[in-house]
Image 1 (cartoon, helix red, strand yellow):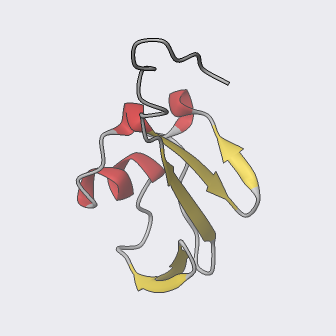
Image 2: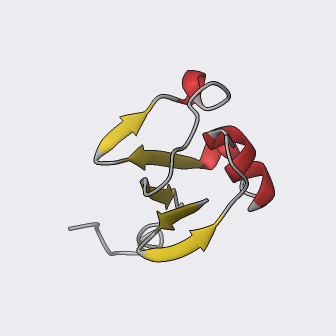
Length: 77
């Protein structure tokens, strides 16, 4: 069946769950948020939420980082 994944059309097996999709993409589940048709799918529901033909899925990756620590005599602003 076809879904839209992060704005691109994708062919996936019928009846696949959000969790199975993430696993097939080799995504670390703890580091993403998933939205299906503009609704956030709770991590606890990833293994039971089945995708359907035409669903629009957004997988958002969390990225760590930030400003480097200030050097001597400098303060963060």
